Length: 145
Image (cartoon, rainbow, N blue to C red; front, side):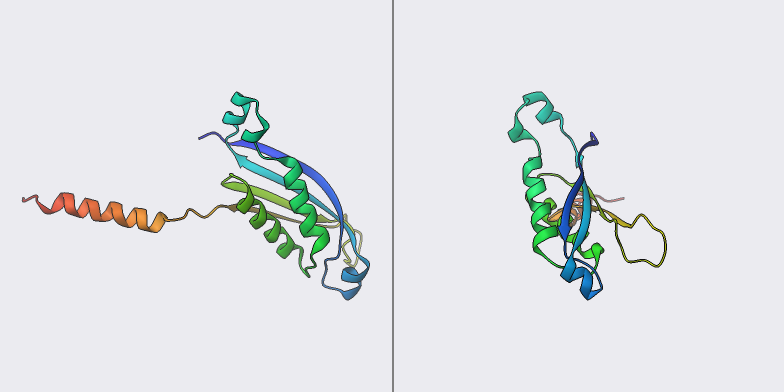
């Protein structure tokens, strides 16, 4: 299976996330990268935007979560972004990087970054495996040594 990548890098937003009340009141800069992992052969062959991931829509979904919600942890925000994108787009795996450049740490630092990789959960996998196991049983029942 092909492992192709579509990336939307360094989307910048003003968000109101953080452990400290001041961070959630004043707000600060957040940077987000999203990387979709899958097979883009159909889009490349058709040369039709309907066969690929709509990056404008990706941007709007990320923007809405970063600017419209408030979370204490960047880990939570990264999870929300990944879940929303996996629900919306026909891709099985993605990576989200979320940076908070002005994180309040005691010392010199470029900020913090959270990176997560998430996959769509395969629905019905348990039943399919169970059914295959039952078929194997049935096939072997009529045999004698």
